[in-house]
Length: 70
Image (cartoon, rainbow, N blue to C red; front, side, top):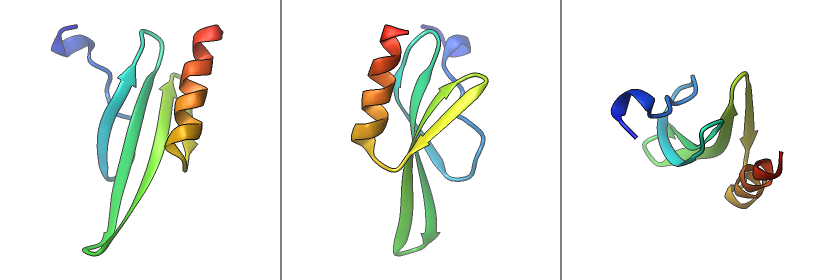
């Protein structure tokens, strides 16, 4: 995969880390720093035009894998 075909992070503040990708979707971790001592992390599945957000890595990963069956 060349740089032009790399998935682009969803819109939103914070640091985005690509965890997994498939041809039709990508799985991201979003971390937002609220204060120097506190940050919040969400897990996001981007499958344009939809974007699904989860509080739990396990729940998000299970959904990402279940999409293989679509």
